[in-house]
Image (cartoon, rainbow over all chains, first blue to last red):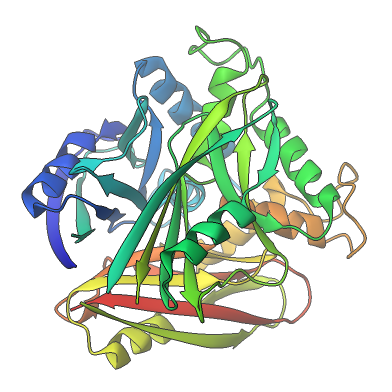
Length: 139
Length: 139
Length: 139
């Protein structure tokens, strides 16, 4: 068994949902591994990962709007406001989605289901550069 | 170190919570590995995984009811409605539970706590066949 | 490739958020591995893990308060009440945070982002001893 690790950056345009399936798949390809596990890791607490339906873009938009209703920007009950009214809600939306996703690899392919895509959720209002680490291990 | 990967199917009867601990444990047994990590992966975006209390079935029922209150079926604010009123809420309930769960293996056993069970959450109203991949690696 | 697994205990003082980054980092140090993956696993269903901002303690307090609003103690709609009014909400708060977190290791370091800390969330009102397993694998 062996492993392969890469880091990549995503420039976001502020609050939104950005598919990174191709970037993750490229790391699996470069690893040369045919069977194993792939972990994508997000080095932030106001951006997060989620695996969601990738067939219809309205699904991604609905997810963003729902997370905004669960943890609204500018909530007066937050005390952590030093970084702006969109910061604490960003941490909350990150806490209930994921910091990492782990996906099996088989026949050299990332085993995402037919309608699954890997997404970076940018929870802050303005543009950020986000760093992801992808780690693949197997044979 | 070595690895072992299997896929299995669960036929659900529609919206509900289905324990899969025994199915996952069987894969660990067949792997022959005594120390390592086991990852269960759900290939869907309207069904998900969660580790929850398995001692009292009312806990599982309460979890389902609460997820339904957080992301109600037929929510008029969703725009992704082409697959029915229970589809978008299914994606939302999946987004805040998990697509994969990773559990350590020691002494040949899956190290679930005394009251932990691994569950598949079927979020759609009607019956589906769901595919899970179990990957075990270790020594 | 090789692996290293340890278990440790955290004594909580009841409902709260407890940083365990140093404990997890110590296991990585003792493993002697320089590149790989580290998984922390929580053996409970009324305590859970989350990676959150560690720079400002108000962020952790806001997260706890928000989880309490999402899944309030003593919710009359719960039927699983045999273990007290804070038990079922503890399972719900665990279900939407995490049972395990997986973090890459590079140059012998746990690759947490600058503001990321690993936290144990104790969801029960009173003090408990919680067991975490940390598994590191790599080279």
